[in-house]
Length: 176
Image 1 (spheres, rainbow, N blue to C red):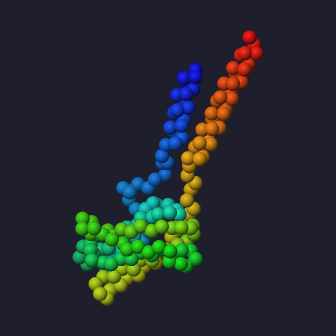
Image 2: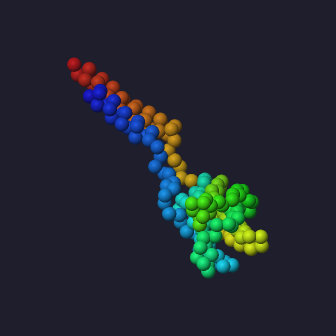
């Protein structure tokens, strides 16, 4: 019986200390938050994760020439996160790579919940500039399990199990 109890406790400890399953999968398709045509360019903006919470977010901006339908690979794109209080809190260049010239990517960090404004400035050549502003609702991050919580949970389980064993053993001794 004691051996079975140890095996059960080991399984519970491993399950309780396992890695959190709330992660962002980089292979998920981004949530499209804007699709527009401006000054001869088809522009779409996507974000991962789909439900924005306080923390990091990954933005993907796609720019295609409306006439030729070819990706625009020479744009200079800057993305800025403006907090609910109106302060520019985070600024990042959106970059593409030689193997994926159609998609410009940037990461932003949201520090508080509320309605944020994402400002995207695109520059094509020396004179052509496109400005976009996108309001986004950012929620509070959900509470995640921590090591302290897991240790507390395991402690309570151990107290209940060993308390039950102690009471059972005590009543057996009294009966003899």
